[in-house]
Length: 117
Image (tube, rainbow, N blue to C red; front, side, top):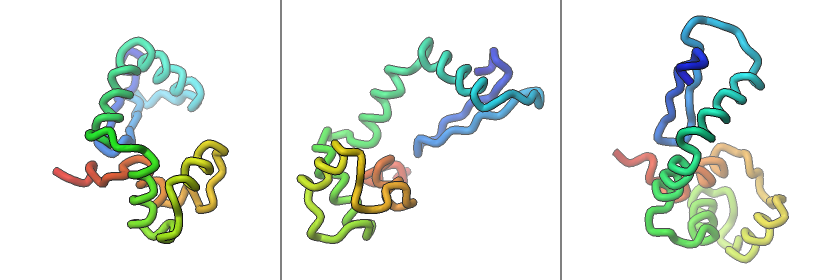
């Protein structure tokens, strides 16, 4: 990103900061194209693997860790099942507010490992 005039910093929780080095003003679409180009050339596969291992190091079933996190966070009740989560995931339509802060946290870090150390 530096070659395009931006500082890029990725945080442990998966969020990232992109800041112009010289106060240039470009559209979000242009900056996104720079990021996509850098990702394709340098780290797409490494980042995907890193994120997969970081958020689920024991490779537990996604439905298992998602439902447990959603229940722990109070997003869904104890009667919400893994089967229901898998069905809603396949349909990309959830019975809960999928973009709430709690649901988003479960999607990004279902085991709560990012909050450690």
